[in-house]
Length: 204
Image 1: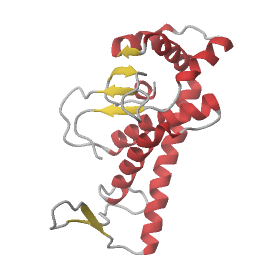
Image 2: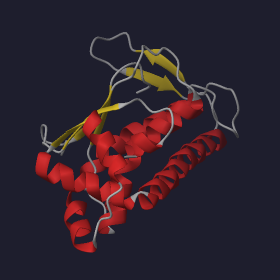
Image 3: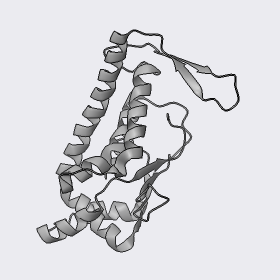
């Protein structure tokens, strides 16, 4: 739902609540319409919004949260940190790159990042990352609150069909059928955090 309501997001091709592996309770598959080699600040913040959708849905419908959004939260935070430290997209820190990545010479060692900034800058980085994520979180909360009936309608359909293709999702959003309180409670059961998959070039 968030991906459909946020302008410029990659089209949603499939939503599934069929569990995959040990962590994913389901997934949303987005595919770009064309090859992409660059991403704008708006596109990155939109992607963070989509990743936060599951966690926000939990809070709205259950007034509680679970571990289901772990991977999405990790990816959202990583994108926000890249925006600040690698892409120069921070309003307060400006167009700078912070931290130098170095490849270890020994086999099997990961890429490590050399910190080339002060504790004060580190604090500012964390503050900016949190601001980006918090702003996106509030944006998603408004979207899901304003589109509550559509959200529950999609959830109810997923409970029955388990998988929704992109065209089916469009038709559900266009129906505009009111949802009563009893149906709302049942549909909310699937409004839990799940994995958001996006193909194509993306910062991770």
